[in-house]
Image (cartoon, rainbow, N blue to C red):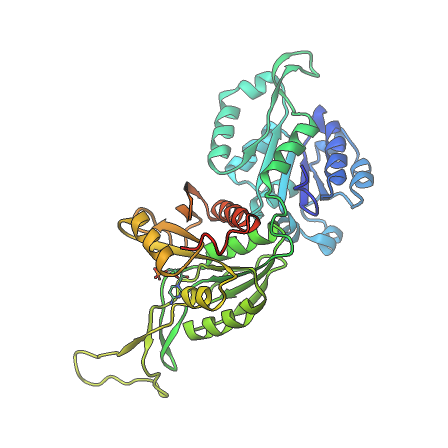
Length: 406
Ligand code: C5P
């Protein structure tokens, strides 16, 4: 326990007799230090009043999608972005079906659809409804889509039936959500992360670049914030929203990125190089737009860019340094060699031949440190980021950064 402190949690309450347990759920989350907001469906309000949950959460309960007043306070998109996690408890059969279909038919399903936060579902329904193939198909599909199921439990039901479909106890729900979050293990640490591509100018209108979307670096920034770190994200040109509480520094070229890294690393503890830095840049940048020469071929002379992560690892030996190795063959061997060559504490090996990585939300990687290699298969970039941050925190706390450097 202890991982819910200052986490921002939305509780979605659906119609069903188990809705009375939501009051206890709100109370337990508050007690754990979470900031709780409640969304109730219309059905839920037939079982428990918004006023009860407002009194317990200390905030107005959200009930309507198209309520002008509520949208002025915290609108549905803002609410979706605000959440670190959403718990739907009780999750009624109809809501499960809507979530699986991606329907945005009320405030709760709309917020779930609009949020990138992890969503926990604690179903509660009559045992016959739970056993129906339609419900079971929805559950399987939701799990495949990344929703987290909590329960249901078996036992006597309010309707007198005995079977599976009772909502899990609020304390069990809190335990599951608590253990999902990493602890605040990077509290008081300053983490610097590079992300995205760099652009290397050829002339005032053209440049060399690559397909990096920046998603992995941004996911790492979010995971480091979740772990309690202060985060500076040095990003090349990307089309992504900055995660909350992250200090973002925008750069264009590899040389800009190196200069920014040198500056912020003066006061950093951990450096994570996730950017796809251009290895070469045009030797000279034309002052005017280059014209066609009339020749069939044009020769562009390139010169090598500095290796940012290797430079930082060398100039700041106390910094824990993490790099990435995107390889198309001999992944692990090449990654181990790269870890040694660049003097990194950790390298995260990424097979770019096996799957479409660029721009995708999922990935498979192996996290390689001095004495541990840990593979994470086909997970979201955020999940990979969280596990990578946990491994980085483990090395930081055992204070092995210098001793274990390759
Ligand atoms: O050598 P390679 O480009 O495969 O190494 C990838 C790792 O090195 C990544 O962590 C990347 O961010 C970092 N890198 C760097 N500066 C460069 C090239 C790569 O920091 N010029």
